[in-house]
Image (cartoon, rainbow, N blue to C red; front, side, top):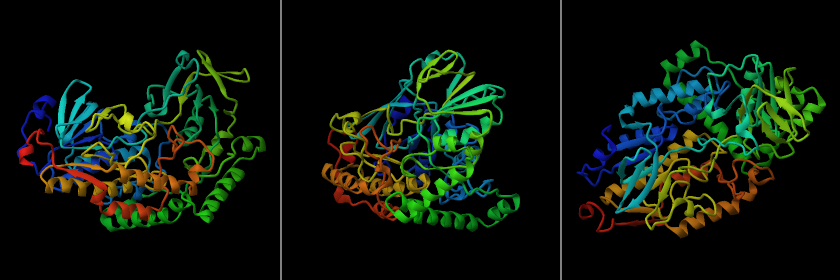
Length: 508
């Protein structure tokens, strides 16, 4: 699996019934895809990972205070419980260690090409022709996009950003060489990442200045510590970890996952809890109103966290709500004319959440680029496939229920669905499988028709919305998503024999 790209590409395929599969990314969903493919008896699998380690977002994000907002035992693969989590809500380093352990246990490292970024994928002659940044080439019968959602940092468009004379970095590119102790630290953004970082930085910085554009609703986090006795029981009795996963999954499914799609009593309870959290924790009425959002709770990604309200009231923390005029070498100047002098500037400004595989250039069967296919907004059929892009499937693609549920559970259901389509390829000994345009249009129209009943269209701006203002979300219950992913309706797909000119077409 680790032969040079060009040498491996030249090897003939001996068995058309066993496809060569390439996976883009070795994060949570990429590792899952490789494991499930191996279980299905497909062993010609390569994962391309542009970084030097597995883990995806948990590898890239190493900022202080990083934790998952999904219960830890729910944030595991269903087939691989983790008895070693130290808290109900796992810390980032523990999640990264979990994925590294899974990759070792399932012998995935021999399938991964680290430090190799795919820059182009073109469907030609019945296969995906791939090019990497170093000029290497490869081919694939099946291409799986597992590049994740939150992996391209979003840098702010602020005048003078590059002129800052101190240390500056994005939270997803945390610079461990910068000692924040005793420094004047500024942080642009007060979203979920900033909320987790603030209590940590407040404890060491001489001063922390938070630049807030929009306040966030914060739901208290019912965290707890797992002692050694609990971990030992979970190791001895793995069924207990599976039980925890099932309980948390059902609680999530019956509460939050329903609230965001229109269950008004549940949404009112969430809103009341967030308001109560703010009003109980923040004593200063002026500061409290600065921190009070004017939109419905959960319209943006709801933040589950502890400690932020306490930290923002500390004497060494200043909350700036005036807009930023520009960045200067000495610091940040707000529109009221104040220069906030800083030694370090942290950009907690989120991600380009709708890039998916891009900026990799993709070209489908008829010469259409992915950018052109998505010119009017990102979309997919059943969240996993795109018309005109045969034998290409996505994990956590557009309209996955990422605002409703755990990404691992979503990816597992999607991979089950994709495997059934791959089995169709194997049974027919090679074919081109892509969703029909009309089926995709109907599916996405149904999503648009259902979206007005959800919380995401109640008037806020968030990364859930694409550049056209459309939420790339799932407007129905998770039960419906599970049912949709149970079995592909092959009538929704255009399934054709490979063209006679394709390599090995005669064997198909």
